[in-house]
Length: 168
Image (tube, rainbow, N blue to C red):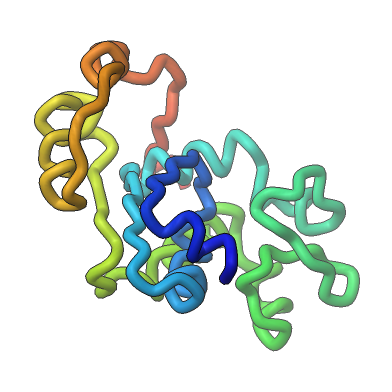
């Protein structure tokens, strides 16, 4: 709380893909905080999950990453948000279903929050200046000396993040 009081007027930006899952709790701890959450298409997110193996059988047997945060229930390693009583059911899901479960749970507690501003990733990449100006208006922000240069650097990603539902 002491740090919160000192930094009340600060704006902090960070790329934290798991932030939506923690936002509800953080909003309780720090009332008045505004979260700007960049949302990608579910197909793109699932494509990333599959390539990274976050929800593979192998990850459940011995996590090779600490992201998303895992915890051990019996002999199964699960993402933090899976309740103990749902561990067995979650481990029986397919890798795609596990990814969908994570995606849904990450946003479920914050969808209606007035302190969460959702921004569509694809729209931002296509029109960064327009979207940035709308964000500034919403949060009472303004462009800084490097804004123009940074926005001009935004391009379509080179990574293939595609996912085909027909291949599931």
